[in-house]
Amino acid sequence: MFEGQPKGLFALALANTGERFGYYTMIAVFALFLRANFGLSPGVAGAIYSSFLMLVYFLPLIGGIMADKFGFGRMVTTGIIIMFAGYVLLSVPLGGDKVALVAMLAALLLIGFGTGLFKGNLQVMVGNLYDDPKYADKRDAGFSIFYMAINIGALYAPTAAIMIKEWAEKSLGYSSNDAYHFSFAVACASLILSIAIYYLFRPTFRHAEGGKKVEVKDTSASNEPELTKEETKQRIVALCLVFAVVIFFWMAFHQNGLSLTYFADEFTSKTSSGVQAMAFDVPWNLLTLTMLIIIVYACFSLFQSKTGKAKMISALVIVVAAGILCWRYGVFSGKADVSAPIFQQFNPFYVVALTPFSMAIFGSLAAKGKEPSAPRKIAYGMIVAALAFALMAIYSCDLPIPQTVMDADGNPVGKHVADVTPNLLIGVYLILTFGELLLSPMGISFVSKVAPPKYKGMMMGGWFVSTAIGNQLVLVGGVLWGTVPLWLCWGVFMLVCLLAAIFMFAMMKRLEKVC
Image (cartoon, rainbow, N blue to C red; front, top):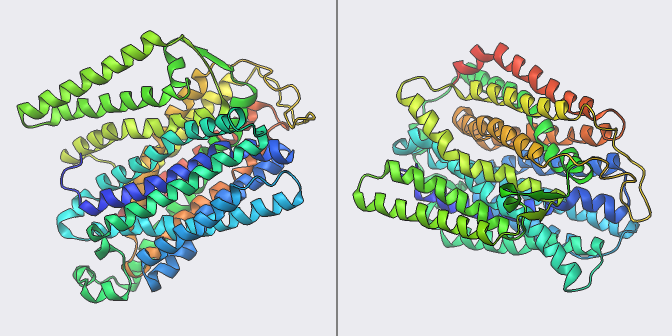
């Protein structure tokens, strides 16, 4: 799985892990913070939340254009500095008045612009590592590993957000609203770690940074076949078609931080019992999930190792991890409180745990010459996402319309009107993750492969623009919340995913022509 990859991949992946950990720590509680701290309605909170996500994914287009001129590495460093300033501002408890609201919006602009310089350009650098012919056939696997590293950061973020908030309340005596800012401060520390990793291991990927000094020495571009104007046009059109489709995936998928979090907060049971409760028992849930991931990877190592010693070590790791899980279950009370933000740990957990299976399946299909093309995987991902929201619609048929009236403490009147089993959201996040693994890493790999060499930064930015538009449309979940029956809310997202998949299949010949 990890063999034959360029060393720079792991350094860039770890640098991105630190940044994503801070980002997802903030995102885990941000929608709830907006409603609690400023007393905003679900629709207004959703508009701010989705607009921020839009900025985070739209501005990589600007960052990509700047990087095509000034170099990817320079923009990545600048982006981290700007992001850090934004997170520092967001970390300061200023209350819930208009001044605090303006300061928060200013912080979001800084974070969005900094992320725009950092995120897309780092991924272009990953793609540049595979311009070397000896790594060319490892591109899809490399992006799967890179995507897995992103989700390692996201996996631990929700628990960190909850723990730091509770610590600020109980140990420092901060109010519930002010305590949210301590969750945001985690991002500051994670960015320091991210930039440290970046510069410590920079020699392993410096040739992929771009910029005038590197371009003089880099001969990889001269080895690429010259594209005609017609070929360039075909590639750009194909990429734009993919961009148009993935808009609707992100519109639906990123409901995890908005309407699905509202559902967890207002309709899902506040307690869990049995084995599954170990995944909600903060902070021990991190141990549980980590041991499960270790067992998965050790099992793959056990079957793929070529020496007896390696197999023995893998087996020992499995036994130790399983023993830790058994010990934890033995001392566990059998019951745990369920906090709404904690559900956001399941998607990154599934990504990290399932990536080896995904790589093994597609690797086996590739060996047989039957691996689906990247565009076809994206279309399948849309169908899978539709299935997740179909499940939500079915289980929501008998549930009441959510309440939008707020009480004096900023909480929805009538919240917790139902005790839906946590298993519903656990299962929905699993299905959504299958769709994500089919769409996101493969889409990024597709862009890095198909984009004309002169427009790599811009086209990677285009991928993020499509994500940005989808994120802006996330506000649909906030608008629908409390205005239509729940089943209809989920049905809207199911329908747009299905229609996008149909469109993708209709365009498949044109898309596969440039692969």
